Image 1 (cartoon, one colour):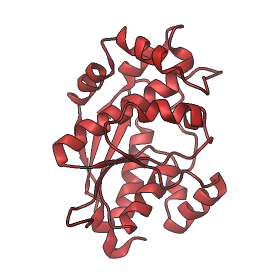
Image 2 (tube, rainbow, N blue to C red):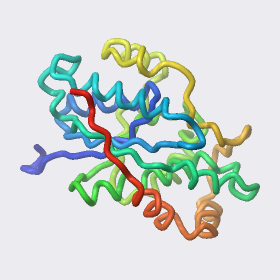
Image 3 (cartoon, rainbow, N blue to C red):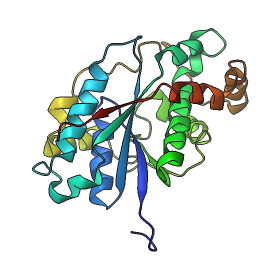
Length: 226
């Protein structure tokens, strides 16, 4: 509780190594976590969703690494299909910004969930400079798509530190392997986003809010096996 108010965050959880570590850190800090996963089916398979469910199930298990704090993680994963929407950002005018558009869409979706459950923050596993969408020049553009503050507990860590923490939690073996989020991405993504260009590209598709609402209308829920 903070000033008598429960601390609640929407966690953007992928099938990768980083986001489960971020979830564990904030659960330990007393945050109530509502996990969401943006599925890129049918562009990719269901592997990322299955890994997400497995890592969250492990963390939410009372006999797992978080012990009694495992109850801070809600035992239902919201899955939102985004594959067909992301495919719209592969045309020449927007493809270089693909990963930034992707993260901006995810943030908008997180804010829609937050409205429904009363969350005050988003939570991500972002780490400064690790991939193109996480350069300082791109993180700012991504953050502008969120009306809520963003928790980034891994921001200053290097990859090996995150891997070591994932191993201690027991999530590394579940999460390891190729990430599939770059299936439609460009070979040379932008590293310093131009916000006017981003908004223009999104506007040509009806605007980011409309794109997010369309994806959100197709959401479904998957129970964790705890």
